[in-house]
Image (cartoon, rainbow, N blue to C red; front, top):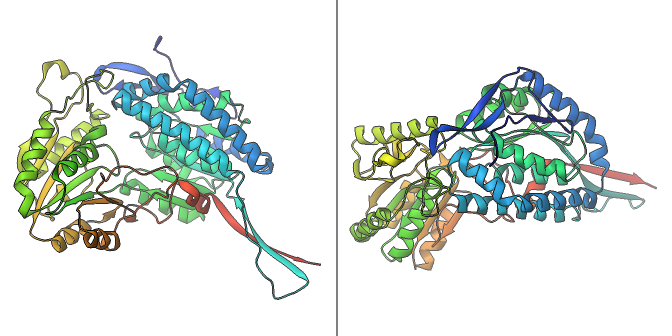
Length: 485
């Protein structure tokens, strides 16, 4: 990876140090003694400088044709593709995701850029009949202006790109705050934008603590839209700040995603989907399976197969080819997950496997938690209600399909849900009755294709959708035009 370096903010086309003069180290969660590099610990002044740059650039960017903006995105995709392995390796070193997963995520970012590059040639309005025969009336879509982009550490390439790419193609300029835990990965992505020749001020990046930089973006009067992915607690604060200043906001705030296994399910398929959906990426996905609701007829067999499959999981450094699951992304997240495991035990859950740090001396320097499965879980328990964001599965036994649906909906979140059944009528009932923005049948809960709308219900979302053609709804306003001859 070369010598350790200090990474800068990117403002108005230049790499600049923060006004605070402070930096902090990015720690490799596979080895807490390794500092991957240093990133800026910025202040409100840096956010203001980025907003000034984005404001100055917005008119010229808005006047670029959709195809011209698309050409830039194609170039960014090409740059990212050439650096795929480098960026994926940095992602693994910064947040612990296995290298194959990191490569897959980076490839997804490339595909998103190319998808939205093509969106620049789509229509942006409709002709509407007027009651005046001598008039022409139509709609067009116009950009919001300056958009604040606040992203988490779990998908440090894909999530920023699925926000930035549509914002740009629809004519907005950007002030981007990545998660501090993965700010170096974000800087490498920003280098691709710079190498592609994006005009100065169109995409700006400021790194720093969320309660400083994120709040400054949420409060800034010259930011016209804010797109945020993170916890529901922080999301509420962002939404309140945006509402107070009249800015548009989009919040994706996590989930408590169920998988339902009914008595006619293909159990081997359901087990594999549970393991992949719940434990891959160390359970650090907003769509990760967290609750496993199993009909009593097949519960014991399912449990046996699940525990056998989990025994096969190899935990270790994400850069090692034999590793299936890496560490938690940070010390903070490591302790958060351990606290939820303790809470599960305190409230009467029975540990079937895992329950703490991996017992392997070779892994002592990392934030490794063993894949954990609880049973005897009721819907009222903390680990059945709150998002853990770690490799923890809660088994819930039910007597009927109807009870399974009820329990699946008995949380404040509604992001994703899946069911395993061969019964078409149960598939339809699940599809209609689940309070979730993404429902998947005979497939894991984690996963959505980039061309499809993504978002949740209840406390998982503010209601708007990301990705696909639905993105235009957030990143633009509709303008109605009336022309009298």
